Length: 279
Image (cartoon, rainbow, N blue to C red; front, side, top):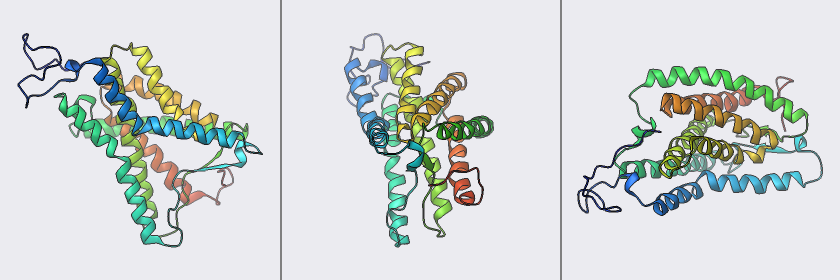
């Protein structure tokens, strides 16, 4: 990956912020232990913690009597059944707080003098992002659905319930916001930021790709083996395209579209078509 050159001149001492106390401190000038700690903290506050929770959840499901497909993994559940306004407040609170790690990543990128634009998180190429994202979503979405149905039938996956929200006016808007939140968080952290930091730490492109793909799969393990494997494959494709396009924008658009179709589609079709598994 391409990295911004340090702003300091030849005489800048290692580990010293160029431009004095108020100057920028490019990521490459940061000591490796600092970069490593920063990366671990970001993951611990976001998808790394989700991966550990997913592993614990999967162990619980795998050791429970009965098959995996007879158990359910609900993605968007009610937090206050029977109290729609309180439920809405919890839904919006959860979506907002889940995006805090993205703000942290943006801050860290700004601190090194690069900013979110360094990973292609900007509005400079909206048509490119949306068209590439829509094409990618169409290719992965249909394949992913067929793979899920196959692994569930084989008993390797829980029944995924994309939503179980009350039938109120905010149901669909919240599902769309949840889809966008998932897309922004995952693609910014597990692709743009992770690959940038691993590159600055001297990791090989192959090792960085494998780490990103395994991390993506691991925090979907709560869905079962299918969730793990399917998302690892998706992670490989997304890293390859990110390196080609040098932008997370198309990946965010694709991920958001996939999740919107999954969440809203389930809300509209569950119980009305025979091929769609329900809990």
